[in-house]
Length: 140
Image (tube, rainbow, N blue to C red; front, side, top):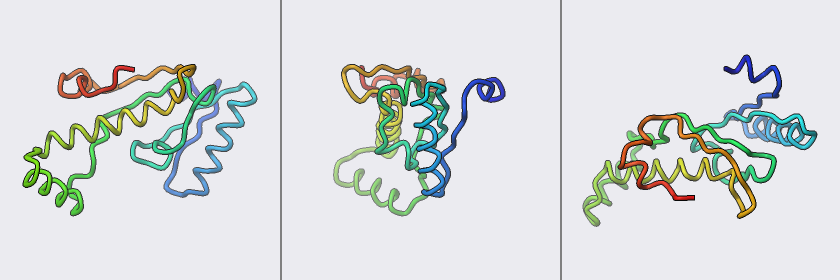
């Protein structure tokens, strides 16, 4: 698929290096501004998926592969899950599902930042068809 895409669009990738990612994002925006368009690949829960808007012509489609669950072996997350269960009777799986869907919504919502924006949102994972996931997605 990428071989076909690269024939007509430039591809930029978010990396762990902040300077490199900033440069890639700047070049992505330049490609969009000149009319060529581009593809920007980033990671859910990464720098680009939170806090950077892809409004107007900077984002017309988002494809989300997978469900962005947190790293469940984190000591901080384990403590939070225990606290939620003890004090609020919120089960681990309920919180993890809620958090993953919230994160997925944040990622795809980068393309719609005003009432005049539009964009295609593709949830490319069959798990989004399950009621426990789909019912928690915003109606948009």
